[in-house]
Length: 205
Length: 299
Image 1 (cartoon, rainbow over the protein chains, first blue to last red):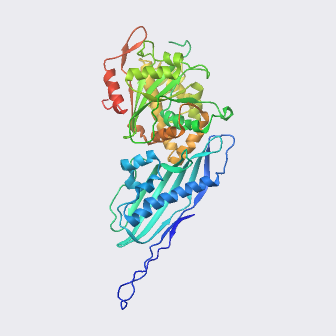
Image 2 (cartoon, one colour):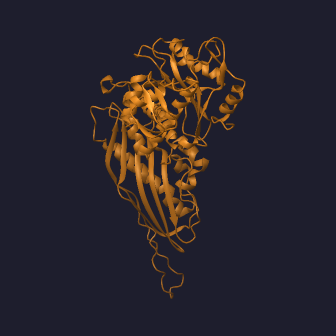
Image 3 (cartoon, rainbow over the protein chains, first blue to last red):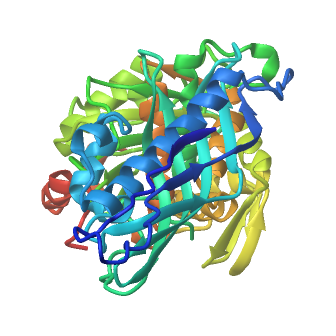
């Protein structure tokens, strides 16, 4: 699935016809993720399903892509993320955790703005589904390994975010992020040192 | 209240409480368990309206109770009583071990209230005693604890003293050991190796709770692993008033707690009426320290 493939090639021209045209700047964004085969954790010990409904897989994939877009691509372009957009991705407890200090880890704000293309690459999302007796998937874990490269004025900015997002299906059937265990590394000219691990996430011993 | 044969103390693993039990009670939203899927190892009940929502807010309290009931209909004496305070902000916890013969606020031994009134009865007594509001309670019995420990592959523990008790069959030498379910039960029941009997026994049970947390954390290094553990354990839990998501979050929180950040403190008791043990003058200060943030700092 391609969430956003923005062919935003911009041609910057000078005002004087006699001057040579400035080189074309590619401001496209490539964010194309895939999801791996699900691992089913089922409460039914004697009838272990192996298949997860396609709409659930798509919902998980879509949510992870939305997260990558709103938490990384948009801030790289604009400088900050949109709170309203984040509110659609995280449930209320998760938003409280963001406000309590995790935002600096989960959202790539305050980095040098991307002036060129942004490319997000990743291996297939590791997908674990928690399934009830009736076969409904009530929670999911998305193991991610995202590498984001953004062209900025002073050179490339690179972000590597690894770990997992825990996703929950709400009563209205929408899926939202409710937890995470993430590690992030950001590098590039002008990138200020920031947190690499969230204070409220699960920490393996 | 005494049961003639065995005054059995059951260890109720904290992670069993938080991860195994609570977490797994995930069920609630998933429907009733199918009995054929496996024996019920423990029961998880939520009290009151407060439910942990994973927000970094208020501390909360759990009761982990071992009972000596032989069947589902037999509540049994609440002989292993551990009130666990968890601080979600600091990721710390304190286990308050309550000797079973401690006199409850209403006058009888604290362990009798489970046999007479079930979990609500003993929870009410503990709430009164400590000035807290227990949000969740987990209880298990002998077969439950053996099966649960065996299913998770046993528990690693550093035995710090010599156990020699033919009554419980507990014979352990100091050192790091890997205990099976049966050994865990023996370890948790031994009160004859100690001059103060149940006082040391209840502290030993807390050591097992912490060791179980350590073992589960070592087996479960991530969110996906937690999810698989939930599914596995949820096949063996009976829940009451427990919400799936809240329980999952509780279990997840448990996995964040470093066992080194878990204190174990036994309620100070002395001679009381008859064979009852009375709280000493140090108890009120302990409970006050415990209830303000779920963690005892003064000890």
